[in-house]
Length: 177
Image 1: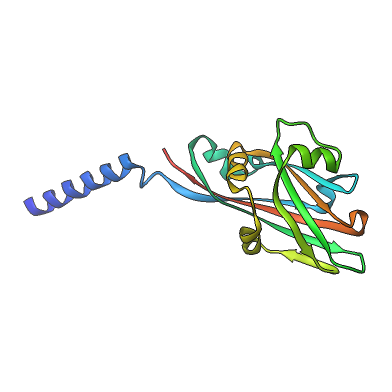
Image 2 (image 1 turned 135 degrees about the vertical axis):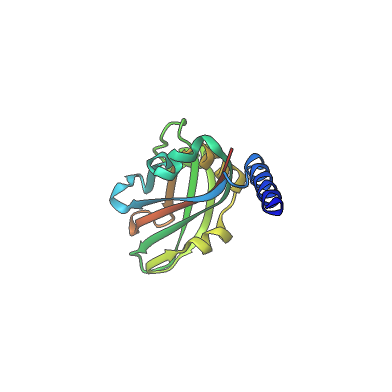
Protein backbone atom coordinates (compact mmCIF):
# COMPACT_ATOMS: atom_id res chain seq x y z
CA UNK A 1 0.00 0.00 0.00
CA UNK A 2 2.85 2.35 0.89
CA UNK A 3 4.46 1.70 -2.49
CA UNK A 4 1.22 2.62 -4.29
CA UNK A 5 0.95 5.87 -2.28
CA UNK A 6 4.56 6.77 -3.11
CA UNK A 7 3.97 6.13 -6.80
CA UNK A 8 0.78 8.22 -6.76
CA UNK A 9 2.59 11.04 -4.96
CA UNK A 10 5.45 10.93 -7.50
CA UNK A 11 3.00 10.93 -10.41
CA UNK A 12 1.08 13.85 -8.87
CA UNK A 13 4.29 15.80 -8.37
CA UNK A 14 5.34 15.12 -11.97
CA UNK A 15 1.90 16.25 -13.20
CA UNK A 16 2.12 19.48 -11.20
CA UNK A 17 5.63 20.19 -12.54
CA UNK A 18 4.48 19.60 -16.12
CA UNK A 19 1.50 21.85 -15.57
CA UNK A 20 3.66 24.62 -14.11
CA UNK A 21 6.17 24.47 -16.96
CA UNK A 22 3.40 24.67 -19.52
CA UNK A 23 3.89 21.25 -21.07
CA UNK A 24 0.30 20.21 -20.46
CA UNK A 25 -1.36 23.51 -21.26
CA UNK A 26 0.49 24.55 -24.35
CA UNK A 27 0.30 23.33 -27.89
CA UNK A 28 0.42 24.07 -31.55
CA UNK A 29 -2.54 24.90 -33.72
CA UNK A 30 -3.02 25.73 -37.37
CA UNK A 31 -5.15 28.57 -38.70
CA UNK A 32 -6.19 28.39 -42.34
CA UNK A 33 -7.90 31.24 -44.17
CA UNK A 34 -9.23 30.39 -47.64
CA UNK A 35 -9.87 33.29 -50.02
CA UNK A 36 -12.07 32.77 -53.08
CA UNK A 37 -11.18 34.74 -56.19
CA UNK A 38 -14.34 36.82 -55.93
CA UNK A 39 -13.39 37.83 -52.37
CA UNK A 40 -10.37 39.80 -53.60
CA UNK A 41 -10.65 43.50 -54.31
CA UNK A 42 -9.11 44.30 -57.67
CA UNK A 43 -7.79 47.59 -58.94
CA UNK A 44 -5.08 48.65 -61.39
CA UNK A 45 -3.91 45.08 -61.93
CA UNK A 46 -3.64 44.44 -58.18
CA UNK A 47 -5.44 41.87 -56.10
CA UNK A 48 -6.05 42.89 -52.50
CA UNK A 49 -7.46 41.11 -49.46
CA UNK A 50 -7.49 42.10 -45.78
CA UNK A 51 -6.53 38.86 -44.00
CA UNK A 52 -8.23 38.53 -40.61
CA UNK A 53 -7.17 35.47 -38.63
CA UNK A 54 -9.73 36.26 -35.93
CA UNK A 55 -12.40 34.71 -38.16
CA UNK A 56 -10.91 31.32 -37.14
CA UNK A 57 -12.26 29.91 -33.87
CA UNK A 58 -8.88 28.39 -32.87
CA UNK A 59 -7.25 31.80 -33.28
CA UNK A 60 -9.93 33.44 -31.15
CA UNK A 61 -9.56 30.77 -28.46
CA UNK A 62 -5.76 31.15 -28.25
CA UNK A 63 -4.91 34.69 -29.42
CA UNK A 64 -4.06 35.91 -25.91
CA UNK A 65 -1.75 32.93 -25.31
CA UNK A 66 0.30 33.01 -28.52
CA UNK A 67 3.98 32.43 -27.87
CA UNK A 68 5.23 32.24 -31.45
CA UNK A 69 4.16 32.05 -35.06
CA UNK A 70 6.12 28.95 -36.04
CA UNK A 71 5.49 28.71 -39.78
CA UNK A 72 3.45 30.67 -42.28
CA UNK A 73 2.86 29.72 -45.87
CA UNK A 74 0.44 30.30 -48.71
CA UNK A 75 -1.19 28.36 -51.48
CA UNK A 76 -2.08 30.19 -54.67
CA UNK A 77 -4.20 29.12 -57.61
CA UNK A 78 -3.46 31.40 -60.58
CA UNK A 79 -4.55 31.15 -64.20
CA UNK A 80 -2.29 32.78 -66.78
CA UNK A 81 -4.47 33.57 -69.79
CA UNK A 82 -1.59 35.03 -71.83
CA UNK A 83 0.42 33.22 -74.48
CA UNK A 84 3.65 33.50 -72.46
CA UNK A 85 4.79 32.89 -68.89
CA UNK A 86 4.54 35.78 -66.46
CA UNK A 87 5.82 36.57 -62.99
CA UNK A 88 3.73 37.09 -59.89
CA UNK A 89 4.53 39.08 -56.74
CA UNK A 90 2.92 39.24 -53.30
CA UNK A 91 3.30 41.97 -50.68
CA UNK A 92 1.91 42.36 -47.16
CA UNK A 93 1.50 45.25 -44.78
CA UNK A 94 -0.06 46.17 -41.48
CA UNK A 95 -3.85 46.37 -41.49
CA UNK A 96 -3.44 49.77 -39.80
CA UNK A 97 -1.93 51.14 -43.01
CA UNK A 98 -4.22 52.53 -45.72
CA UNK A 99 -5.34 50.18 -48.45
CA UNK A 100 -2.88 50.97 -51.25
CA UNK A 101 -4.57 51.48 -54.62
CA UNK A 102 -1.67 51.33 -57.10
CA UNK A 103 1.38 49.19 -57.75
CA UNK A 104 3.61 52.19 -57.00
CA UNK A 105 2.01 52.67 -53.58
CA UNK A 106 2.23 48.95 -52.77
CA UNK A 107 5.85 48.74 -53.92
CA UNK A 108 6.80 51.80 -51.85
CA UNK A 109 4.89 50.93 -48.67
CA UNK A 110 4.35 47.17 -48.37
CA UNK A 111 6.80 44.33 -47.72
CA UNK A 112 7.43 41.83 -50.52
CA UNK A 113 7.07 38.18 -49.50
CA UNK A 114 7.02 36.54 -52.95
CA UNK A 115 8.94 38.09 -55.82
CA UNK A 116 9.02 37.16 -59.48
CA UNK A 117 7.44 33.72 -59.08
CA UNK A 118 7.12 32.31 -62.61
CA UNK A 119 3.56 31.53 -63.66
CA UNK A 120 3.30 29.29 -66.73
CA UNK A 121 0.55 29.61 -69.33
CA UNK A 122 -2.72 28.07 -68.09
CA UNK A 123 -3.72 27.05 -64.57
CA UNK A 124 -1.02 27.08 -61.89
CA UNK A 125 -0.93 25.95 -58.27
CA UNK A 126 1.78 27.14 -55.91
CA UNK A 127 1.62 24.69 -53.03
CA UNK A 128 2.10 25.42 -49.35
CA UNK A 129 5.38 23.45 -49.38
CA UNK A 130 6.64 25.38 -52.42
CA UNK A 131 5.76 28.70 -50.80
CA UNK A 132 7.94 27.91 -47.79
CA UNK A 133 10.97 27.91 -50.08
CA UNK A 134 9.90 31.10 -51.86
CA UNK A 135 8.75 33.37 -49.03
CA UNK A 136 11.00 36.30 -48.13
CA UNK A 137 10.90 38.70 -45.19
CA UNK A 138 9.69 35.92 -42.91
CA UNK A 139 10.22 37.93 -39.72
CA UNK A 140 7.91 40.72 -40.91
CA UNK A 141 5.36 38.18 -42.12
CA UNK A 142 5.37 36.38 -38.75
CA UNK A 143 5.05 39.68 -36.86
CA UNK A 144 2.04 40.71 -38.94
CA UNK A 145 0.51 37.23 -38.65
CA UNK A 146 0.90 37.36 -34.88
CA UNK A 147 -1.14 40.57 -34.85
CA UNK A 148 -3.93 38.59 -36.52
CA UNK A 149 -4.56 41.00 -39.39
CA UNK A 150 -2.64 42.14 -42.46
CA UNK A 151 -3.14 43.25 -46.05
CA UNK A 152 -2.28 40.85 -48.90
CA UNK A 153 -1.49 42.29 -52.35
CA UNK A 154 -0.85 40.28 -55.52
CA UNK A 155 0.31 41.53 -58.92
CA UNK A 156 1.45 40.01 -62.20
CA UNK A 157 3.68 41.57 -64.83
CA UNK A 158 0.98 40.83 -67.43
CA UNK A 159 -1.72 42.74 -65.51
CA UNK A 160 -5.13 41.85 -66.95
CA UNK A 161 -4.05 38.58 -68.57
CA UNK A 162 -4.10 36.53 -65.37
CA UNK A 163 -6.61 35.61 -62.69
CA UNK A 164 -5.88 34.95 -59.05
CA UNK A 165 -8.47 32.20 -58.64
CA UNK A 166 -8.00 31.67 -54.91
CA UNK A 167 -5.48 31.66 -52.11
CA UNK A 168 -4.98 30.00 -48.76
CA UNK A 169 -2.98 31.46 -45.87
CA UNK A 170 -1.78 28.80 -43.42
CA UNK A 171 -0.36 29.89 -40.05
CA UNK A 172 1.06 27.44 -37.49
CA UNK A 173 1.16 28.93 -34.00
CA UNK A 174 2.48 27.83 -30.60
CA UNK A 175 0.35 28.89 -27.66
CA UNK A 176 0.38 28.29 -23.95
CA UNK A 177 0.34 30.00 -20.57
